[in-house]
Length: 55
Image (cartoon, rainbow, N blue to C red; front, side):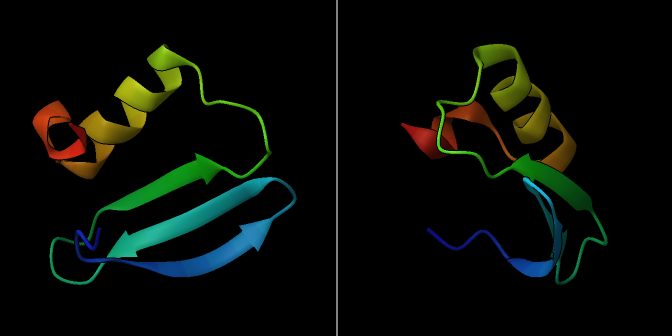
């Protein structure tokens, strides 16, 4: 899936992505564990995407 975000940097276990056009930045945890539902909801909200994009 490509939603227009590109990798910017990584610091520790967090990856920073920025949208090519919308100028939105999203930080995503990069550990091997499952992302908690609340964290995932926050990432989706910050990105400007909708939950249906992930079904």
